Image (cartoon, rainbow over the protein chains, first blue to last red):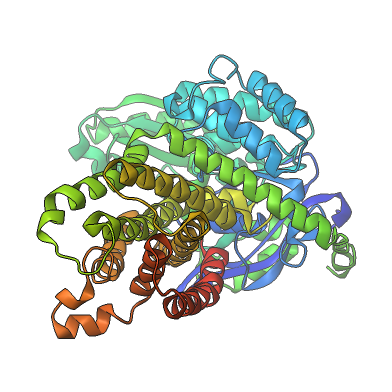
Length: 351
Length: 274
């Protein structure tokens, strides 16, 4: 802990929350410096939304502590609410009201004066390219417009810290890119952002730091680059058009890889981490696939994506205790290590 | 860790009761405005709250009215009927309260509003104010239609106004019950089904549409001692004349009871709702 916590927009220590038998959060720690973007990455049910709900004062934690802009989310919830914005899976937008009416009323609920609410609404509508649709009911908006209006609503109170809970889930690719553009401009304006997502490319694209959560625990943390380097170098990837030959292909490339090959049965895409062996591995792969008489498409070597990292971290091939946590912050490691569930970097242990 | 612990900022100073009260009121009014705007833009909603009570008046006046005998009522069945229909209208207004809150809960609207620095009470308060306002308008429409089909207040202006106030307060008390059910059940269809289960018996097994003496004895025992009957009997006496006091006292006692029990229950359900 070199960071002074007064420079932190968000500080979370040992946060736990259970719903009956289900342990949604089993002791997570987070530290987000002001003006940076933290992406909380994890599959459905990993605990992302629970964490956001606690940080936005909607849910009380069972134990642990969470500060937003130095204020305790439990003891000083009203002050926290004054410094945050929340957008994403929930809906602040009233469908039957126009975009402008929605924003004006939210402005009033932030205790802005009537003229100030009005000008703030106009400002935000313009910024989010909704001016033309401002006086239409939100019901008529497209998915992307809707999400933009919802994001605008979360910015009415000029929050210092913004929470975006899966902001692009369900959006088409074009709207998604538009959303990323907007998010980038917000961050450029100095807003601290905590973003949850299931999409690795989104985290890669937007975040300064990524925390991977699975089953209520932080299982890895670092920059996108750091996480990628955990896969242990390059990734060999190819597609098997004949799905019945996937297992043959995996057997053929298994000796080449530094870890277990992974296959997507739907798309027929097979990946395997090959460490620093680079083009040697490529040649070996061509040979053994040829010997096994497996036809492939698009055999190539590439830098690892966060998908590879994620697979390595949360896949079923857990062989060794997770060692990533220790790398970032000691306190994270000790908590995670104590947990029953083990995760591994996968690609390393087999070598 | 200890270093971080010590840098927790102290809680902000409480803005004071006066400021908080002002915010609570202005926030509730904003939510009221939001709810009323929705009401005016959803045609089905408008039909449900305006046309349905009018249909009830016409149906009971002209279809069932001929077959229903009432004794000792100045002005005949239409005079007997109108206070009953108004009571029923006030009671049924709470359907909308329960459904709207359940919808807002499942859609995450309540969550979002709760993450804002607005008064915690405003979502519930604004909902109740909007629904009470809506109910009041509906009551006035029903009275207007009643006048068109032969109903007349026979006891003077002040009792007539008191009757409208009593109906509104009674409707509000039912809105509180409905708010509680909506927030606890949280699923729109279940809320609607549950509404039928408690609202229909209470309104129809009362003195709203028929005189209780016409019911079988075992039913009279229930109908004579339930709040809707007390309230409607009071309203009827206010509209048409006759002894008020006994029924009024029982009505007020019931209403206070409902507010005292379901007010805190609804507030608690709202606080827990998530």
